[in-house]
Length: 275
Image (cartoon, rainbow, N blue to C red):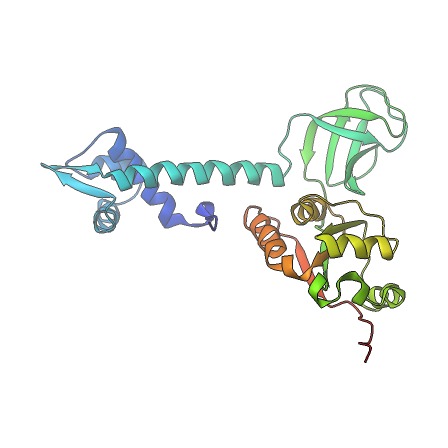
């Protein structure tokens, strides 16, 4: 099921607020609702007409009440809003205390700048950054440090997922790929990657034959999206038969975030067919 973007749909939010008013207290007049929402009575009347036409409101005597469909719409709508707000807060890093790796010796109380490096949040003392805070304790380089008094947003550019389509078994599998030409092929296309994932048996075998370090193997497409979301570039080998499934995973993850990651599809170099 495709996820909604309720936060961006003002009309939907207004419908939810009006339905909530009727749910809390069935009413025969619209003025109290207009005053509660700071809109005109005519605007509320237009929405009520639409809600009734959609089967979400109905007249019971002289009062409008929610239908079962209206109650379901109200519940689902606020659930979607809560999810989207939670994701928005996560995306802009609105947190009270962050856990980071010390990028240099830190003393408790030091002001620190926060950076995303190789997928990790790194704190550097007195460094200029879009996100700043204060270390709660001493820490040596590579140790965990708690940071409070957070201000600003961590500068983060999502990475790219490079999806390499690997022939399925009935197409020759990994052995149909020209492994010797693969490094030159990737370099010519500007493919740089921090992590490697494999989706499907042929993809895993190609990673082994090409001596690629396999970091992501289980639920690899979703893991690749998670890695790209924190700034890592990922080479994802995907068995061709499983490509639709991998694309659904990545597209679904993109729909659920306000900072979608970019992906590109690549056809690998193949060995010439033998007569």
